[in-house]
Amino acid sequence: MDLYEYLAPSGQVVTADYTTSNLAGVEKVICNSASLITVTLTNQPKDLNKVQVIRAGAGAVTVDGNGNNINGSSSYSVSSQYDSVTFEWLEDLSRWIVV
View 1: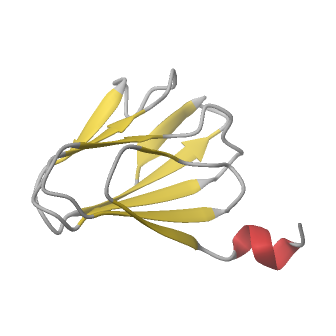
View 2: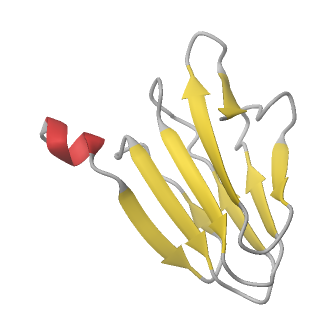
């Protein structure tokens, strides 16, 4: 993989549960469903990996830290339709933070 492939954003439209990878520097996950979707963050993130989760559908979206904390909790809810939340892995803190 070259540097451009790592830095270029990767985007997925999902209609069911989804697990992110650590192969993109920035991964966009667009959740488009009337039902609950759980986005599970990779359990092997690289320092400064970012994942943007967009709730496009009416269904609830939960982001699971997959054993790693997100702002001190094991999961995070994207509260409203059309909300967008970006998570960044900070290796020094060993956790995901909302940016």
